Image (cartoon, rainbow over all chains, first blue to last red; front, side, top):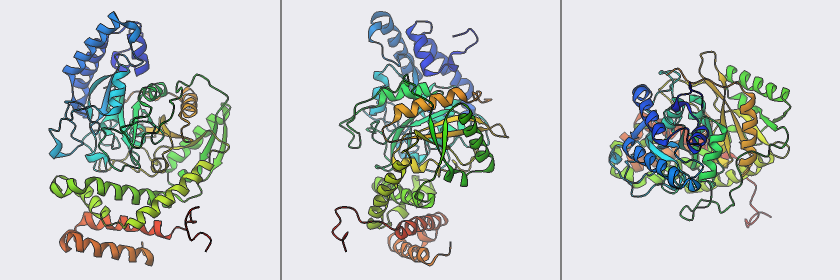
Length: 450
Length: 61
């Protein structure tokens, strides 16, 4: 670390390295991030609950462990992280953006939180979510421009990581809720393959679509998260019993082969489409192979199938709660759930059968390419009345394919633009290698002006 | 969207909403928007051609 690098600027990997080498103390780092939150969070509003006292106590314990048992420290030893307020945290309020849950105190940590702590991570606090991780816009502001959405529903995780209030933060995605906030805040987002990371202790939105992911400031940090969090959990029925591979991306075999997903450009603004074309040309010039790929199923069909599944499952998740607290729900969300109760069961099953076809068709796209390349979002961050268009993230929540959002430049209004890389099922090692390759060839996006 | 198939789906949803939530609630702006959106999705799902799966009994019909 140079003298000029402030502690709050460190990525998770940098912080972990400096802590292991004893150049930085976990107590100093937690203190610096709490100070950073005091200075900027009045504007950004990323934190739902900051748990400074316990974070400092954990940092002191981490410092002692480093002194006394250095051989036992984990890969994230002393590294602070945030968790979206849909992750249960033991004795720390988890309100899911819902009034009646204001003082809800879970007894156990969610599995993803357990695993990050086991790797040495220090929970700094809970980040703002939209209500139940659905559509109502949050109070969080985009650190790039106060009048633009930070995206949702992992709004606080995206804005907080961008504003240097934490090096990484857990998020969830059922539709586009990890990748879109990552794109709109100019940070890196990873949504692993469905089943790769346990959802135990995460408030559900739609069981067959919910994913746990991460927002960070480098691909390396996403890999660190995945190495710590991935792996079978017998307490999550959707968790896959697969061996956890090496995500470090050290093999670096050959130049990547991209499938340029032209369907996505039809939905994007001219500025986003031109930006993606420019990025693809730069990658080609750097030695990559770029081939055009088209989806066999129309985007309208993919989005409709996702909606029928998500709305039906969400209506069932909320059936009892909505009956008890109808007036505590956001008006649009309440109507969405009430309409969801009316969708015929046969239509839900039909949507699941179509999903299987879409999965098979999409897997065919990877015959000659390593990853699909498309914009993460159709536009630069829009106003705060919305959390933005989900349509380019939804297909990969539906199919469960792993995806990364990488900041790739700034718009004419100096707002973040991002590319999305989608890997084949269970191929996160290659996806992360390619993401690193891209990261090294894209101009670094500066810190937001907050 | 003026597709007849979709209009039929919307009408069925509205009828179900009135029976479940009552007339006034079904007329709320948010509820009307939610029903419109759900009808479009349902209609798209229903009109999509689907090959029978391997084990479905009618696949050789």
